[in-house]
Image (cartoon, rainbow, N blue to C red; front, side, top):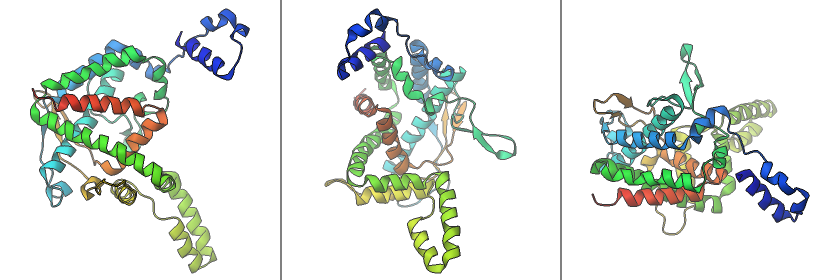
Length: 322
């Protein structure tokens, strides 16, 4: 039925006579999700999984960052920076647990992106449909009523310990702020943003290598020009640092510079569960690039307005007094 409504609206938009189709519009089959995404069409299962993860996050206990971590040294060893990184760690752990629960039936902080194979080779994880291309098809099954039921879960954060709520508020407040920074960046320097994103890809490494080999054959001057045109690939801290500098150079009036502590690094591990059954310690968190990437993905999927609405609602609940 949703497919029929969509096609009817499209035909009206282009001026096509609906009488040409008659009753056939009511017979158009609905969009069918790929098998890996089908668990997310079960509304009750998704909501139960989300509620379960929220409950587990209440039990979170953190280790202190290790001595060689940037978060154990100035200028990044402040309470405000620690609160943000705890919140970011909680959200990443919670996201991974939610995906595992929906797709595999149990909570785990295994990465849905990559897994270690024999010889420590990185291979695609055997689960994680929610982090892969195609997840935008879920808009075919998640209508406004179902989304409203899911968003009603934000009230569950009221019962979280004050410290956990404060950490989540620190993270989501910064995520909200970076939405505004992304708006400024894409308005002021879209080409520079696209080039920086390109420099973070593996394909760019191969292209740069080929260009440098060609230039070297032509002489030292050509090599220097090519090196300037094709700077080194960026990843992890270097990608986050370059994104921070780009944001600072293209910020709107009134926006402060981004802290160098947003370049990221390894933070302390979190233990989740009444007995700390689940431990999650990310290899590294790189907010300056990740938070901009978050808003780029939402824009690509057409869900930016929904994300802003949900974050506003969540922040209001997190800041509500018990």
